[in-house]
Length: 290
Image 1 (tube, rainbow, N blue to C red):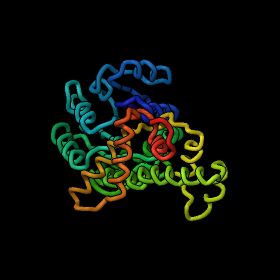
Image 2 (image 1 turned 60 degrees about the vertical axis):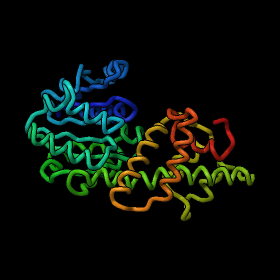
Image 3 (image 1 turned 135 degrees about the horizontal axis):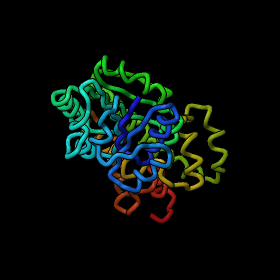
Image 4 (image 1 turned 90 degrees about the vertical axis):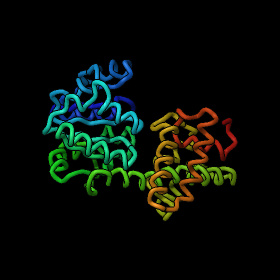
């Protein structure tokens, strides 16, 4: 297929490399020129605007940082809405505000006839590159059927959860489980290290019991090595937890654990660590310079 892709950062690189590997032609845009230039190197046809990337595309995909970024890319000057075809579908992999996602989907359908799938993901850049993401999708049945063959090439798990917005609600649930667990893993590792336990043996000792998880398997070795290079940015962790807070407020749902985790990440951000990986929250427990 001809795919227009907006957002060529860490996740966008993984996505577009995978799509090209699967045989799709990718027209890509990112507001940062250096990202567009780099993407040419792995086969992306760089576009000068979101509209140019969406023009003549069978499918438009987006993976941007904030809901405001998404709205600007779709409805701003030279945005997707100016060029997307009536029979096309926009698939948004970003993590965005539920209510605004629904509003934008309704607006895009009314103004252009195009469909919208909200399809936030879990797994990070390595899974995007390998095609092994967990994709949580919301959208109309017909739109989902039309994009499923492409999405299946990107996912180890692809679940259609309901109408537009259902994917984003599910992603908020995912973030409660994952991002609060960053803090729990940091607390537990610090306790082990202070107690004289060899960190490298912890995963083997605990991994097959109830404490074990794929997050432990992925994150503890990096925490032990103090590898805080971003697979995802701490600022994005905080942004997502603030979105969890807003959704919980709307739904009158209690989130005490997520609220506490958000304050710890906020403290890290205030100390200048927004561009480290979220697992750098370990610094608050170990006494490393923060």
